[in-house]
Image 1 (cartoon, rainbow, N blue to C red):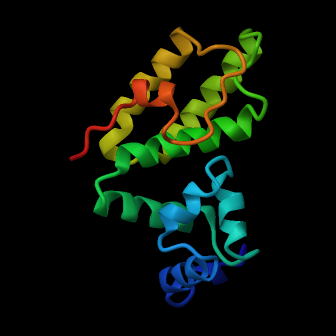
Image 2: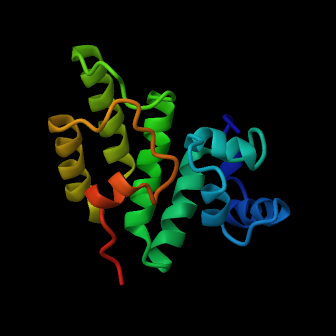
Length: 156
């Protein structure tokens, strides 16, 4: 709802009702079923013009914090950002243009990263730019082997 109506009333209750209508017990389970969709499209899956990407991400962060899965959420958001910028996988030719696109994508990801994980996200960004992954690499979810190596779980 670009006119601000998505924020009216008890929008979290509305969002979770939509999640349950789609057969999921949590927003995280819903997001996991669509691991490469950008947040905007994930919000649209819950109802065109009903929720914003920020609302969906806020709900995901809340669930991740309660279940001690913030690192996994952070990896999942990186998957969404990479899928949007590089739908065919990591560039085969990592020239200046591809490096700029990667840097902008990774900067956007850092913007979505919860404060507790920003420093780790900056380290992952530096590592990916210094030693790019194999051409065509396309993580399909937060449990991608390379992502788990770069950003291992630390939560108990």
